[in-house]
Image (cartoon, helix red, strand yellow):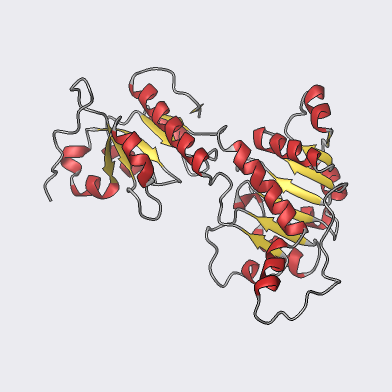
Length: 338
């Protein structure tokens, strides 16, 4: 198939707009259709399908990759085929899907969108905590079921106000969760690589636990808000789950691989802990026969921590800004260093 846009699209001054590789437009994991107009004013968007069908013409033209929710996947073969690639902009905060050192070795800069997602993700953490503790999804199912003849008086949830929340990972997202939990009059413990400043702790009433074990043993709710790194891979396993209270709930808004999922299934089945509320799993989605999907004491959402219209638009703007800066030889905003 011949490439029909070889001349490219020109900007206001008649200069050819830079070529940027995207996975697709629309479809399941593509660039949102309502983002396309903004992006096309700045870039020639080339889909992976177009690129693979016209490699000879396009390989030297593409100077950036717009990576929307881990797509297009980047490997060494792709990097070798794009000799003029300068920058990769990845949506969201996590970079566990990227080999930043490999990209750096090719002279490619990497940027993400870590700060814009924090408010919505913190909201999601509290939403999961509240929905799980008050059994909101189960209650909805009961209320709309054609088999329901009465509402049982002994159908009870767990009180949130006055309960102890243990936050593992007190970065931007974790701290915003603490701010919200304070409004619910929760007692807040946290475990982090480094202790927050005293004024930051006092502002939310948070108490630092140098050892994660101390947090796990005392918390009614344990919320995970860490980045996925080799150090946090399966941070919560059988031993950690057994340290938690049998009445405790585990909430994960970080990455699925921060939890040993097999150990979690066993803990939930055997009532080692009371419940789990997960916005992330591994893989995503889970196989339809996965045991987590069959447990009544589990609430799972489809990794929607940052999924609001406004936040996704700002993410797109920030990615475009990073690409433009990188191609202009300027410091890249929100650059991820190897």
